[in-house]
Amino acid sequence: MRISHPKSSERGAALLIVLLLVASLSAIALTIVQTMNSAYQSALISSARNQILWFAIGAEDFAASKLSTVSKLTEGKITRMTPGFDEPIAFALPNGSLKARFTDGSNCFNLNALSQTSEQADKAGAINAAEFYQQLLSALEFDTNKATELVATLQDWIDGDTLPRPGGAETSYYVSLEKPYASANTFLVSPGELRAIKGYTKEVYRRIRPYVCTHPDANIGPFNINTMRVAHAPLLFPVFSGEIPVATLETELSGLEGTVNDTVDDFFALPTFAIIGKDNRKDEVLSVTTTYFRLTGEVVYLDAVTGYEAVFARDKAHNVALVRRRLGVDE
Image 1 (spheres, rainbow, N blue to C red):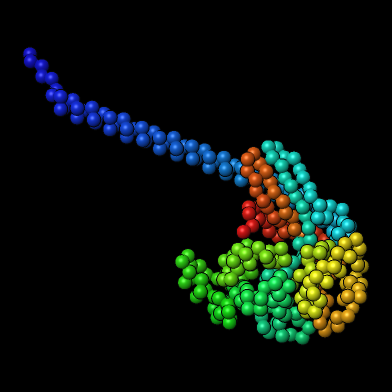
Image 2 (spheres, rainbow, N blue to C red):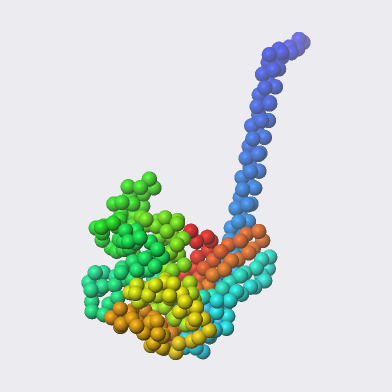
């Protein structure tokens, strides 16, 4: 029987097929390993995020309980001397740590006050929220044109109509952008939403962020005069209709650091403020109680570090409950 042997060309082709098959299997194996590694890393990240969230929730529960107790004991009259107020708190946690600080969340301009309609603003005794915000922006050294634009675009973002104000912007503007979107036509949930609004650049946001907030109501304040610091002076500028320079307000607040005013009238009785007539004051924006609290800090878990913020509201019975939370960087 005659046995035929493969020709060298056939052996070469077979070898090439084997090599290609091995290369293909290697590529598939590498893809599987990479996919498994990616899935493993994603699982680790997801697990870390979940753990960080639970740590934050634990901190919130602790804070709400303590703030409720303090609010009931003081009837909401939190001051700069209240134990634990504006002081750092640190907790050791399994595989991590938590740092926190609670401050008065009322001492900021509520951006949602810009939902005020012209009819509401024109009512007798009403405070015009747009004018108040414009004066705050003036205190932060924005020129008149820029301040007018920032007021108008924010009003358009919140209101329910589609007609842009002079200098404002509605959905018709935002859909023309490279990455189109629509205006919210409702309250802002967090100050970070400003970055989506025309005119609110990163620099603008950085300048105004310490002085603004988003509460689930349309009230400008009230600001607690007994927890205000020197840095809050720009907030008082519109309270006095812009008649007292920010530098003077800073000096006055510095002198009040170790004192407590029993009433708002005591505050207005101070010589610098007493010269401003009632018609040029916005008395109802100030108070000696705190309505909102703010908890800020960072959670460390393994190699992950995450900033967080929680806002709490106090009701008439002095119970304190969570309003919103944010995990991550505030852009």
